[in-house]
Length: 314
Picture 1 (cartoon, helix red, strand yellow):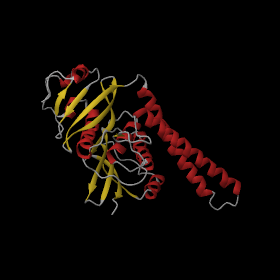
Picture 2 (cartoon, helix red, strand yellow):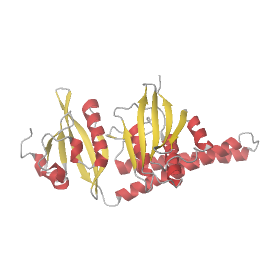
Picture 3 (cartoon, helix red, strand yellow):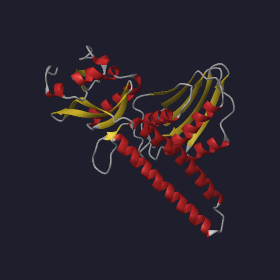
Picture 4 (cartoon, helix red, strand yellow):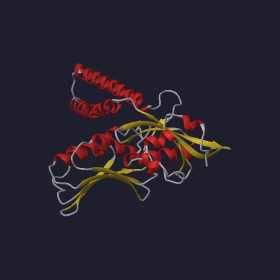
């Protein structure tokens, strides 16, 4: 139990301290002032319950990384109309992780809009890459050296634009640069495919009247490789179902393991209005190019599920 008056009590930034089990043991007055649900619930309340629903998973993931791997984690969350940048850092004693401290900082007004604009850049970049790839395939047998040179220039220009977009995102979210700065939870860097972060990005980019939820089992393994092509494919699946005009009750993106040998990413359409036309040949070809198996099942009353099956390495 932390003494009632510490230096943290005078800090104007919200601070919460938790134990390795994910329960809060202390919040400072600034935290209580901005997160009213924490008042009177500490110690003992699960950390996730001190935040709004959309932030709970990010908080839990950050606590797990901090307490099991001893690394600081950056993430973002919202409380009402206010956005916060957060850093979860491990508390160590005698070489062991004994807790976590989360420091929150109010974001500069307009940052959320800038981030939204940056995310909007991702889709045309994905589409440009797909078009250029198709053009390269068509020009594969051409003897026109000038055409091949121009396509190479276009691909290199796209790569530079992608790098710039990634750097903008890193600056806005506090992601790691060349140093040993804390890593951003769910950043989806090219280091590997994190299933939960991947589905969350797809859900954030897909805009529609139908509610879109993310459901995933904890502790899912990451896959090697750059997740952007898979993200673009999942986004196309979601937007195709939203554009189909069916009266859906809800869309759910799920991630789970199948027998420890494969990762299943599914788009579930709930409601009698689901179903409709099968996925396009282009979507099936893109899935095959990613080494994924695409399956779809539909029921006239309960809905439809489209699943990508990805083999786990080893």
